[in-house]
Image (tube, rainbow, N blue to C red; front, side, top):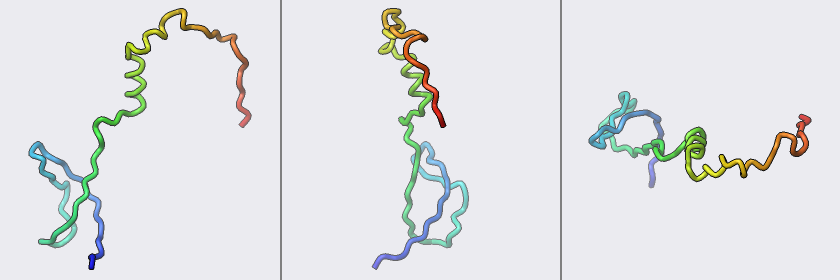
Length: 84
């Protein structure tokens, strides 16, 4: 039979030796076995500004600076006015 589990959310730091150090004392008596789930941000995850900056600086889009690519003018099309 599985025991009913309680959850406590706390923060901590993983040091250079891959050891986890809590920022505070656990509010439960011990010694006691516990299960631990560690959530951490994925470093490779970029925010929108980082994506935009990478795209703006990428040589893959350098062709857009060519005057031949500038095929639209401000007088093209009709203005759109959202009626909210």
